[in-house]
Amino acid sequence: MRRKTRQRLSHVILVVILTVIALLYIYPVALMFMNSVKPFGEVIATPVSLPKKPTFGNYLYVGEKIQYFRLLWNNVMITVIGIVGIVFFSSLSAYICDRRRTRYTKFIYTLLITPMLIPFQTIMITLLKAMNIIHLNNSRVGLGIQYWGFGIPMATFIFYNFMATIPRDLDEAATVDGATTWQTYRMVIFPLLKSVTVTVIVLDVMWIWNDFLLPLLMVNSNNKTKTLVLAAYTFVGQMNTQWQYAMAGMVMAVFPSILVFIFLQKYIVEGVVAGAVKG
Image 1 (spheres, helix red, strand yellow):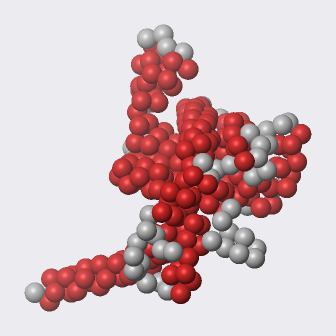
Image 2 (cartoon, helix red, strand yellow):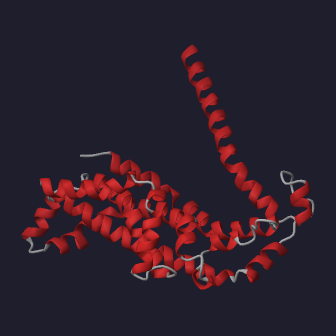
Image 3 (cartoon, rainbow, N blue to C red):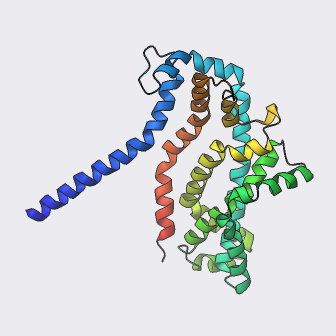
């Protein structure tokens, strides 16, 4: 009885601790939603209270002001370009490095994942100058391509760990049937990477869609290529900030990525667990 009581007490304490931590993370998001439906005066006077008379006029004003659907298309285009490149190159490189384990592929794999240790701030000025030289700045396609370099290291690491769970007998059987390396990867291996691929997609969609610093450097000077997060920031000024519009703009910017996370979150756990169990 004492053992069961201790286990129940430990379970209750754990639930309470996790609930408190969850509330700490949810509170800023809830605050953003609440202030997005308040008039300016109420935001300034009572920023942490519930809205007295919620108004959704802020969303209509912001949507018209920033041309929401055009910027939504910019976000979609940049995210899709980034995700397609990251998934393709990282899964293919992880497949080659895992199946052909030589000192050369081990060295290449180390080079591929090493950029995870390099802070973006240390290379952003050099990157900006390089993008200016090759004319990839102020371009949605150029910005999407740049995410390949920052997303491939982590994605390669995830794919590589998962690749070890796929039996090599499948490769040998495909080779016996006359399949090339590319055909084996495309028709045999890649379909088996579904769970980890969705994990990479969800994580990178959340990152690329809500990224602020790289778009600020690369596409901020051109209104036609701005992202939603940058557009929301336009309501924040040095002398005057329209907080109600800034909060509404941020909600409109992050809402699509939150939906993606809600519908696909189960695949994150499945992919991470599958990659951690070998054999």
